[in-house]
Amino acid sequence: MATTLSHDDAAALAARAADRIKALQRESDQLAAQSSTVLTQLRQLEVTRALRAEELAAVSTRLTAVDAKVAASEARVAELERQRVERTPALEGRLESLYKRGGSDGYVRLLLETAEGRDLARATRGVVALARVEELRIAAHRKLVADERAARDQLASEQRQVARLRTEAASLDAAARKAVADRTKLLDDLDRRRELAAQYVGELEQARTRLQATVAGLSTSAATDLPLRPFQGDLAWPVAGPVLSRFGRAASAYGTAIQRNGIEIGTAPGSAVHAVHGGTVAYAAPFTGFGVLVILDHGDNAFTVYGHLAGTALRAGTTVTRGQAVGASGATPAGAPAAYFEVRIDGRPVNPVQWLKPTP
Image (cartoon, rainbow, N blue to C red; front, side):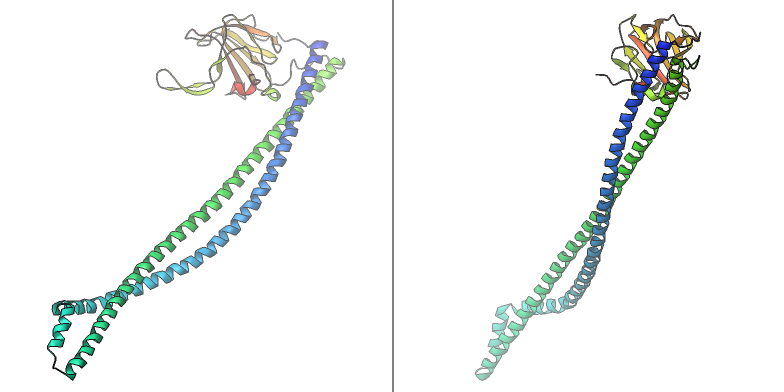
């Protein structure tokens, strides 16, 4: 059965609202300072991205120059290859002729077959000149082959440089874009949290105004407790103990995935389980799989659920204050001593640990 707040209860709730408003305002100030820092970082990143764009332009200019060198190298390699292919058959013919003559001994036979006297001297000079010409032709061919090999090596090096520059340009651009996107997302998240804190402060101010009116005797009725949402992260644990099973999807003993809408807290059998926030009992009865189940309605479509209870003295419609016992802990269906706790906002379960005070 619903009750009207007493003068002292209303004063205590008003004081709690004031304390929470101060905590939210401090959090909002911290978020504002953090936003300012992130804005500064974002500006620095924008400058960095602009610098990266300049570096990218410089790399593009270098790429243009290297591409031109590559094109020139490709043309040089093609020309050297053409010359080598063109000259190779003639040189091979000369080498074959020299081989048939017997190498350097062939020139000796050529001299011996020549007439004596002055003809011999003239022939000697001709043979020496011929040998020198053949030597120069072979040396020229070797140089041509070496030049072609060097040109191909240079081309390969320049092509590797092109690939490296392109990779460097892409990496610089991607890194700058990601950094800016990350900071922008963080800034949006901080702004959202600040807006939420401001909304909560507004809700608490309205509740505190009503409570203060009750304290001053200006009103005969008021809400039995403060709204739940502004106290996210500030609620006391319903019972002390380790978390045995966590919120969310988990693997069952049979290898299938199950969805847990709340948490199980290990505690000694018969331990008092307390309401984390004031509200009205919406349900108090046995429930398959959860032992005795108590659901508290905190208004604004916010509920807390307490299960695995061995029993409860509460009845539907009863007003419960923060910290009041909702029942005694029992055990899970598997027999482990524990209490079940769940938070539902707007009809859907949320991670209850995020609504409770951090454990020491």
